[in-house]
Image 1 (tube, rainbow, N blue to C red):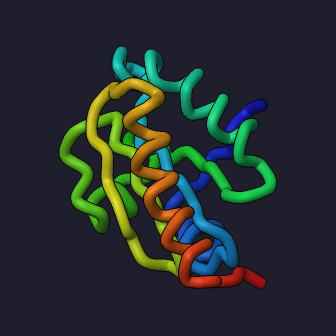
Image 2: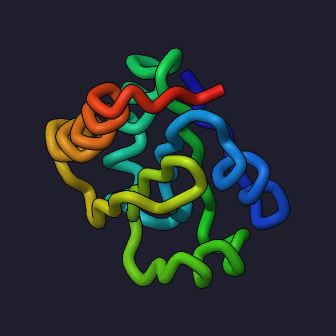
Length: 117
């Protein structure tokens, strides 16, 4: 599965206004660790396709969004729920680390019976 790109002008609509949780991968083409983690992000996008939205933001081409969220190191993965950033994972971490961060928030949603329309 190819993860869709989000740009500065569409970030608000695609991420902040999303009715479901969003995992955002901040990356750049020249970044080796970003390329290492890309297959993991794609696999999560595929495995959770009916639960969350997964998007990528190229920090070189979208500096406004990167600056707004204080991206200083890439890859940086952020999780957004109801338009709010709820978690950040920095670096090329194992899939289990990303899944633990994601699952923690999905469990909160499930336990609080939060629904997304």
